[in-house]
Image 1 (cartoon, rainbow, N blue to C red):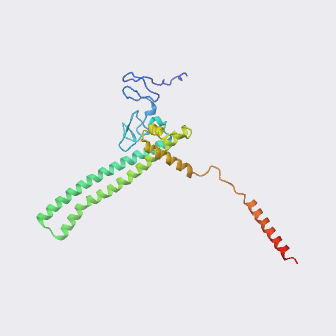
Image 2 (tube, rainbow, N blue to C red):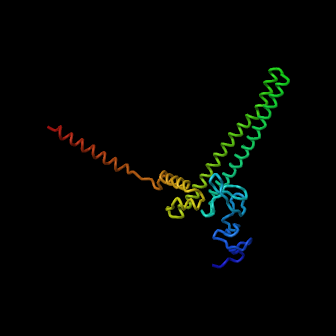
Image 3 (spheres, rainbow, N blue to C red):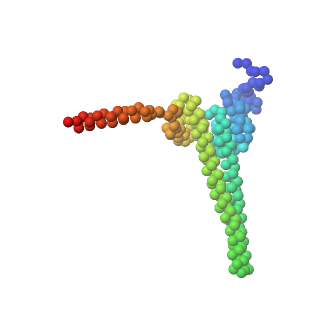
Length: 242
């Protein structure tokens, strides 16, 4: 195959160490990546991926969730889900940080208020107002914590949809016959999770509506019923005839 004029030929050797690149563009010697398969759909940087403690892979540059390149290029719908997951992940992190800051501020304010109230013994109304003011950061911390949990759930749902989409692509490319061990290797997940993905795909296939709805010929049923009723009336007329 000849390379079109003006187009760059695929890189075959690592520019960092001179090692040979694999089919996806990763150097087996130093680990550098050069192929477009490793381009992050969120930050658009050529970057390798790494495993997280939560069991999914992420971009080493921006930290966004990434489908392993071994599973093939992600379609537009999958890229949109990855971007949604990253947004929800960042929002959850921001609310968690805000919740922690408000909690620390509230506890410190409560301690300082308690010391001051014990020292000066103000009027009951002033004391109640001071205690209420010191509790406001604690309320804000609780609200921020709830928001963090809500965004974390949205992140997990989007991430699950991404991996289901990737698993569906792998199954389709293999003609519908994929072992859980092979799927786990391609998606870089444990085999138990790969089995769950395959099971969920099977359930979705079973619950999907048929492509062509069965047609019922109502006229034929009606004609058969009318013929049966006519035969019954004729039999009754013959039995009543003297």
